[in-house]
Length: 367
Image 1 (cartoon, one colour):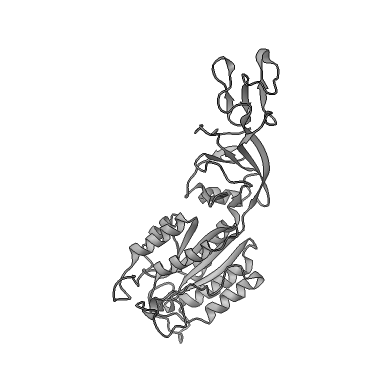
Image 2 (cartoon, rainbow, N blue to C red):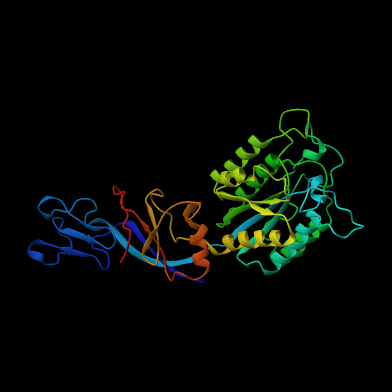
């Protein structure tokens, strides 16, 4: 499904007349425009009435109305958070150092640059890319007590949304960078989260973390290469709590614990890349999900815990692996097989229903 889909929103509204399509029945079965003793037939919530036909909540003067509007794909901010540690000069299929004289090795860093060039050339215009390298390149000293190879400065190497030149800007910046030093994943994710949170552009926000090893550079301690996995996981969980999903690509065979990073980031599992082809495939998959499976509502749900999402009238379960999640205050993100079916054009309508106050039951089908 491409383009637009119908968005049906049931809102709590104040009205002296019943909503369009609903029927208010007074005594004897005749229509009654403002009779508070009448029963109300709701468009998606069924018939609600009290003893003797007296309407309970919602009433005629405060009812759950129906309002139709258009649902559109949401442009996304996608920040590539790229590990430039020294091991990124190794072979992507093994942990062996690359020997440039043999020509048989696919260096991780060079392969990443080639893959990004291919993916960015066909990336949707709805995706606004940015680039953050970690650690920050070009430094000749550390920062305070942070060793040089663990420093992650707040500036982006390529800020999000640099217009039509974003592909060249990202690839050129990668090409001008030499991998070196450590893997300060915690500091990198914290920096990316702060940066994306400062972009008040109404777009859905994502981090694409590409790394080939275990996080190190703990915030406390004198050994830069000491492991820092728990703190990195907490930083990713904090990003997710801020409404930023974190996709994870493991470059090479030794990027362990990445499934847990992906789970903390709300994306369930990481994407392994052990060849140039699998790296391009992983990037294409993530870009496709970001570009095609995020939709916006035209208003903020009054109760985000009482929200029904429907594909061709059928209720879709809420969930990260196969279903939908709420991103920010008014964006719906589809994932897993549901997202794939949307991209394949399997549905003609995407609808959302705001549940009525005091009611926790959502219909499994809407008319």
